[in-house]
Length: 485
Image (spheres, rainbow, N blue to C red):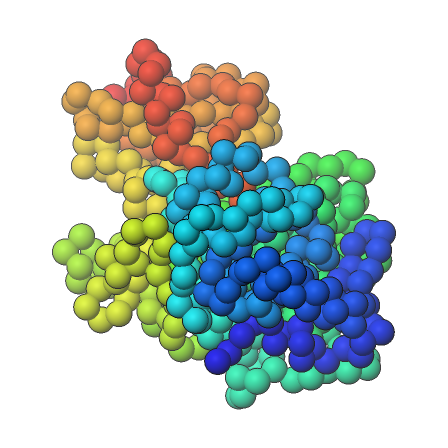
């Protein structure tokens, strides 16, 4: 049976070469292997059996990677918890997962009285974003995740074989910089991606702009991943003038504003590439360097489907729509997550042809590039006219005094729904109304502009629109700006 622990066990580096790096220390391949084996032995000594879950709460560190691999060596299911995650949330995860052990920052401190047993192939659990409802526990399989890694690596290298090369010497890939939490799917994916590529891992304890810039220079990072919020922080940091030798950044975890991408590129000369995936299916759409060189006018698209991935865009009746028309995006990867824990059913999202309904609105152009328009749940139906919040938010950010913005639906007796804006910054409502009317059709202009100190976001930076919408429902309706009805 395929086990992701093999990515460390068979890593091409010699035992004395540094594999897990931070700003101030390093762990060699040999040390990492020995520590992972010791972790596995400790789990077994404490009664953890194959197929049982282990919740591990570790800071972003080499120890988090070691614990993950050690859990797999013991045949158990790895359930990461963020180091700053409240105890109540960790306990809620335990209620769903029924783990055999819960390992906190200071060691093993609790075992579940009746631990659940999962399938032999289940490797680890991550959680859906929870932007539109309760987060779900996603069960990721060893074999499916290995296929995902090779699915993305193959077009990047132009390989015909699914087996990655074992580089050495000058041809060895640059270290893989991980600027996101290793308790999240994005962090785990990028750690395993680096190991599968035969690279070292550079782990940031937490994202800080100056530390990021130092690590890029120190390890000659030419390509990395960043959430949109991190790109915005870097663009806005006047103390950072360049990020050489960085050339490419792939946007992850949340939708990227084209405006934010342009600002980052203009300041640093770094090409920003989108990508698209779901935790349940992994990355299914993305860019290659060749596509970036050949189609600079397409930057802003999510990219093209990876090899072996089928996509289609359907209308409300479920039929495929014409090229360039928007509809719900459905994807069919070669493999996907095993399902959900806790009673949720992944099969409910899969149609008769094996396509997964993503809940995202997209369109495909004539060259096969996929453009994400927004979330189906977020589309505002204003008297039959569809308003995509992301489009309005991009216009609001054109005002230099707007640091952040989000648009949600407000119920309206006459029109059904109307858009309402929440803005971080000190631009006036009159200014924002005039800006929106300059760039948008009248029905897309928000009926109110509310100034707030910040926007509610989840751990990966996605705006929690349901939280804003619930907050808005408690406010007295504001009078629409002049000329808007």
